[in-house]
Length: 162
Image 1 (cartoon, helix red, strand yellow):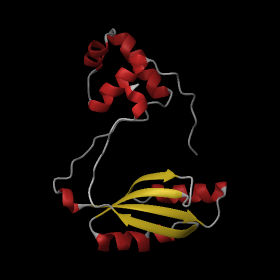
Image 2 (cartoon, rainbow, N blue to C red):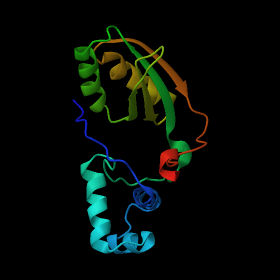
Image 3 (cartoon, helix red, strand yellow):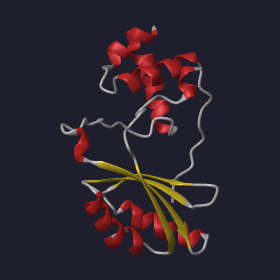
Image 4 (cartoon, rainbow, N blue to C red):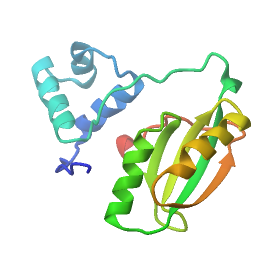
């Protein structure tokens, strides 16, 4: 189960830290401190607070596919047979084990989950659908839509810019 942390109130300095880290997650603490006008120790304290409070959940590399048309993005909506805590937990544990699922969201509305799946092509997605998604616990319905092209990717959330 996800650990719920108390998130601090973000001030302008925190938002600057987040904005700079979104642009360059590998920026050194010294350069980050200089860019926001803090001492390195004060900057590091704020950064650690953002990490321990859960505002910053981790760091990752965004990999550009050398052959952009080599992957097909499929947006998948999953509806479960029953909307119970046990059903959600079992499905979420299974979906975490599927390496082709890049993102998974618990949703409101007509479906219970929305996934972003990456496949080599339509035939590969058929395999993922048949061998993995349809076998996940509690799945009642799967609805899939193939993306034509990426329009926006990795934009910072609006609250970082406030």
